[in-house]
Length: 276
Ligand code: FPP
Image (cartoon, rainbow, N blue to C red):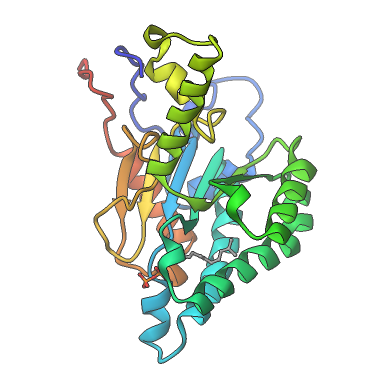
């Protein structure tokens, strides 16, 4: 991370940034949605990461099975992907299945794997039509073979899309990601491709799973828990955190707007100082 940073400019409305003369800028969908929520469309976070928590509790409180909560969570996910794209967010990273979630009862794990595969198959066409690029992050090679095939297909099919990047973390753990990166560097060192002195935050970052994506600017967690649960441990070093009591099935476009508004009101220093 740079020691000197250019800090975000003070909050401005999109209208206030319009040139004094000349043609009025075309009102983009992003600008109009941002304006509807009173947000600065010029300062939408580039990368938003979400820990989608509370599906099980939400279902149990309604006397329903946890898997029903996950199905409702999938409905929310679709709405939030659409909202993220409409707000003009560049990358949306979602914690779908952690490397620790295998500890759950077998039928819940199987139900989740089935749901993820079904969703990946069913949503491909619509996501592609909306110019969404799909990414999957985690130890993908440990997933069921049929799911791996869908993942490879979806990534390939949408690779040239230039809109929202939807990064789904499946069988993902921050510690295993860091361990896998360390292993890659050790292997590179054994081949004489890197020396110990060349291991820096930059070279380390370059062998992480999503090395090509920017670090998250904003990390959202639902269901009120104040922890990061092994999520993007390296990448969230300077992310702004925002937690809501809402369970994931209750999360909406309005919650996302509230998180962005809060984000826009913060001063990011990245370890530096702010010049007034
Ligand atoms: C955490 O809630 C949620 C998960 C472990 C799964 C997330 C999955 C989805 C949102 C649905 C499907 C996703 C796709 C891509 C189709 P929890 O069950 O741990 O909640 P709890 O803390 O209340 O038990």
